[in-house]
Image 1 (cartoon, helix red, strand yellow):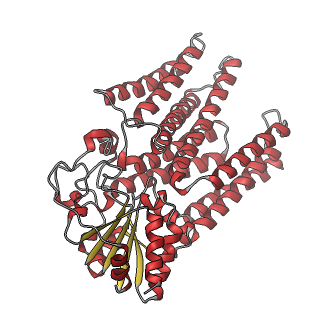
Image 2 (image 1 turned 60 degrees about the horizontal axis):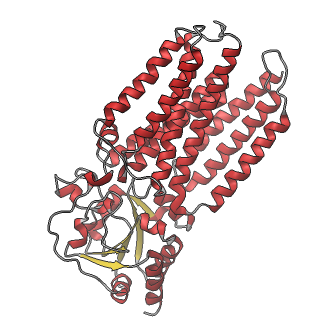
Image 3 (image 1 turned 90 degrees about the horizontal axis):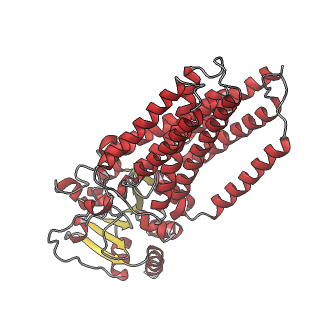
Length: 471
């Protein structure tokens, strides 16, 4: 009876995962989707703890240890999520991806040691089981170590690093991990199982590190999406090992969604995944451009900016990482409402890879309660720019760089951008004239329509609000 009830709980859990994922595809229902999927996960966890039966028919024991671990993890997770700044959200996503991979790896390690203690009985250590077990180790370790490096790079603790022939070394490491797994799977009982197993473990860890180290700049959203996909696939391996349908389903959903998102990110940059992984766009000096003579840029005062925006019919705001760094999303929303009170139409143009993770700008503006219908995607924004009086760019750089369309020598050539140059006036808020995250000079800053408004985004927006109020 307990098994049938547990099966029903797992089905409910799987259905809520699917429903939640569907709801997350729309910003208006994304928060509710998280709650629905979370409720399904809670039901699946409690069902496993109280209804799952071992092979001998006994229920799980050690509830104190289980709930103790859950309590510790819950407290750490809640406190971390509440305290994290919006600028550090990409690092947290990378860290959570990595922890998911580490969990999957530990499951495979525990199961391998369990099989070793039993002497690798053929009925429990067949080729299929060993293939899934080693897949969990390799995928989990790549996710863990790669995410750790991504976290370090996003937080500024690690720099891009590459050496001649690194891609060949990476391929050798990955192939060696797979070959050793196959050798071990076909020679169980030889006495070298532990040596070979932990060799695979070490090689996959090293591969994950070297895989992410050379990738930097604007490619980080793609890397985060890919690591998210790998974390789901590694979790699915754990679900298969334990014959746990809900874990398997959840892992496959995360893996599939992460893969689709990775493809969409690549499409948004007009590049193939192979080109992203091998080209290391934005990583180090190789990506640096802007050596040509640009001429002089022109600046605009706060008062002039306020006048131009107050008397505009339509204003388009382009948010970027600088907005997140300044924690200025609430002030930006205040500016929007102030302009709208004067009869100005205000919208936000969102580039798919703006920020440091997929959907970074959507999350940032949602935190400030910006209405979802004010956010428009790149294609629609590009159609509307010719009718826009003023574009206000807040910390965005590479996603508005016209070199992507006009300079074949630029590393970002071919990448779709927000074509803000079609608007009547462009105001760019930046701290300085330094290149963006990809290390590339921005031709937009030197165009006749463009005026630079230097300063911290939050302070500048606050001053703009004050100026507009006084008009």
